[in-house]
Image (cartoon, rainbow, N blue to C red):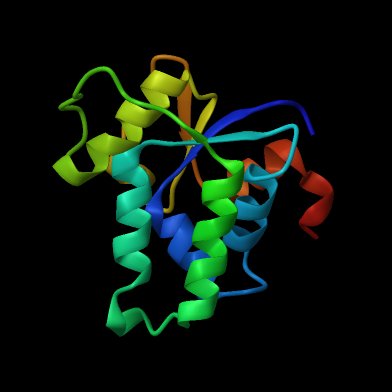
Length: 140
């Protein structure tokens, strides 16, 4: 895999928690392994923590803690320098702000329609597109 700078939307992390054999779990594992570099801001990590803890998702506490620990130990913290009023949903701006500060190659999301196709050099892609780029041999 080539070195990539990544930001991952919360819906990818939630899907990774809910479906052990899903593409999103593979995306999360690839994003937290070298040579990829996952970037998270305080706001992004706080959203991961808050959403994973929602009772209606029924994500086991142990699994939630494992995923958050994996992200916290492997991701590079970054502090966005400016607010970006770009997305249709203001809550999604934090991901573009993180990607902007990290000069990310990709923002991986399950909701591409919420984001522009590109933000500067960051391309917004789905889990399948990410796997097609970095590990096409994993998809039959």
